[in-house]
Length: 121
Image (tube, rainbow, N blue to C red; front, top):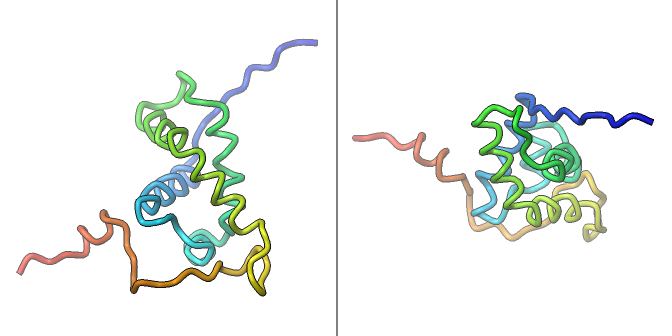
């Protein structure tokens, strides 16, 4: 039996998912509705896409920017695992593809989105 070398590479979709999750974590994380509306997938599915990258670590053959992104994901692994579990558990009166009910304090946006939307008058 031979050892197979695992080659990890981040594609643009994974990068977008990672950036999206990391941008929202300081605000309590994205909702299932956020994922479905933007990526067309549920939170658990997004976590399932990213967790294999997180568990493998940051190989040397990644670009520096991908490695930095992956390190941020690894540092936030518990939060990403929580995204996977949040919609997999029973949601009151719903299923895994329905957005979880979360009290809203108005329209939330990550800082980079708010900053880019400001106009200097």
